[in-house]
Length: 231
Image 1: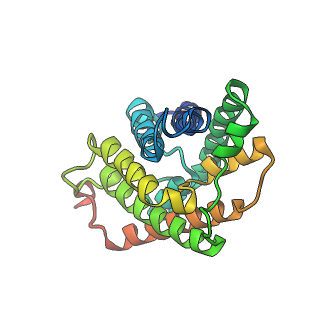
Image 2: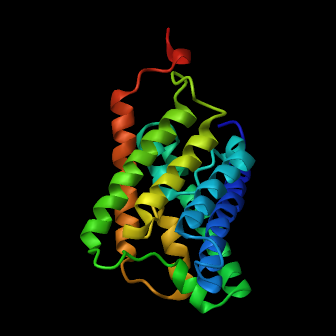
């Protein structure tokens, strides 16, 4: 990538903050105002999905707009991202997420912060949540690898923020009530760190990272070479 790494890391910090804080505020509205007087669960899903799309519009041309350790890992496995930059990107994403969690706690209260911490739905086991988080992150990586990196796809490029945000909106709508709808280790780790509540956290680290890595491997195996690489 032609842009210097420090600038890309700064974009990941700010973009991750914006993405998470937008989604977190949806949960805050639901928690403090009640479902009847505020947004419904589908509104929370829209906050995360559209928040992600907007931050990709803002900084995707700078850093790639990952904002998710599973995405960074998956793209590295797919050979669409330098492996040597995975850990710095992870660090930037965690910093952005911590900032979003701290600001949320300051603006609202500990009850809202606890509501933001991921946990499986009622009667849902950690194992079931793990499998669903893995599958949806796997599918997410396949979408990202196509719309953001595959020059063979006619919808590659400008359409990427819409497609990526739409996926998160859809996944959070249909899977969020079951698993908590993370698909992103940083989204789960950072509020848990500030809240000090770590139950089930391993699910939201292992599942998305495994799903992202598998998605990257599948993309690498089935995609066609880029036209620019043809000799």
